[in-house]
Image 1: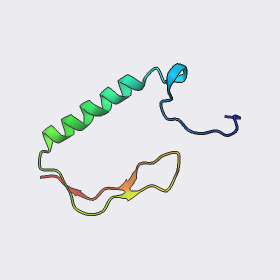
Image 2: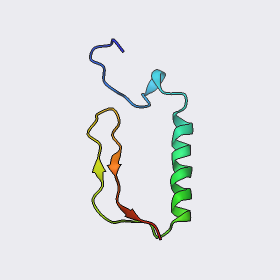
Image 3: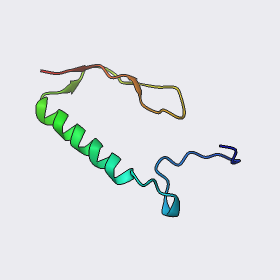
Image 4: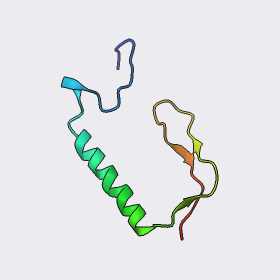
Length: 67
């Protein structure tokens, strides 16, 4: 926390790589493939809005249609 500069490296690399990185990536792949298998006609219905925070770079909204 007190490191300067404190660049965020997400899962990191090399000796400082996150031990759960492979599990997190596998969980993401399983979740996304399961969602798309359940909703094959998923489609965007507008422009996604990204969050404004640097630490959490997700979306504030993703307008979509699930049929």
